[in-house]
Image 1 (tube, rainbow, N blue to C red):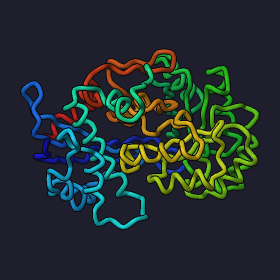
Image 2: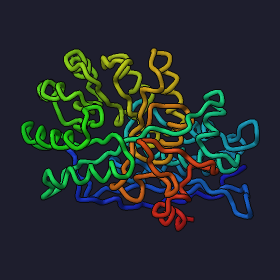
Image 3: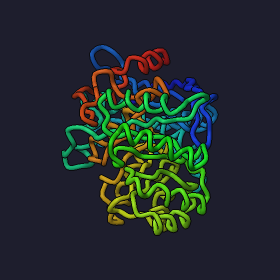
Length: 386
């Protein structure tokens, strides 16, 4: 099995929405297609990948460093024992001549290509990615489906309480049992009104999570945490800068309900520092490392092993990103669930057209690959790359 071509484009995911830290008016994503020499049903096998929302397209890094390294590597050096491309060997080729540290945008570029390689490999194996992962890394055990929650509740001009609750009702009508909304972009008193309006709709605190997107300093996070604690929310997400481990530990000491963080930590080393120094509690807190942003699934598997060694269950992992790659990983590695973006970040947010949400869960089909071809709006973008 050999790589014969790699194609890359930039796709817009612009939106008028905003969280407490950034708006998405200029957001873009990289999309890649890795063409192989393997032929299935008369067509070359092509693997596809893209980066999650929140990080911009990585064209420069992809074109200047990572695509050339993968393309120019000795083809034999990329193969596993079965003669198929081994994503771990490809990862090593992409990271050759890279210094340690600096886990920022390059992790996103590598993650885009890693996703495409796993898509191609599972297509050649003629199995869905979730089944390949269960068989290779989880003793054959996979979940029948994944718990998912609907992420929304963004700010945009003119969005009042009626519009917010109307949005959340649409998510409930789609089959979600838990929703998430943004906070921290308004004064505390105003955001509490927004929270109480949604709570009245969903009926229980554990059906609502809130997300600050890292905007608060410790004093602010503590104050908001004391105001939020009586609601019994599903979790209080990313209240602090993701790399401020000491402040996370101080907050966890003060705020008893669940915290969630990790979506902006992109390496094994950063994830390990969070576990060592962040004061998080493995009986309740949620880890949101995103395999599409953090050097791909190859690195995510290392993070999973590190978590287990530190006494954490993979069930505490609920990846960020709301994409099918993480959904396959959640099912195949038996994680705690997956984020979903049912009405934002099109066409990358959301799952395959034939994978409805039922009672807050998604069941994946037994179809080869990650399943991009089964999501019509996303496939309309991907199929034109090659």
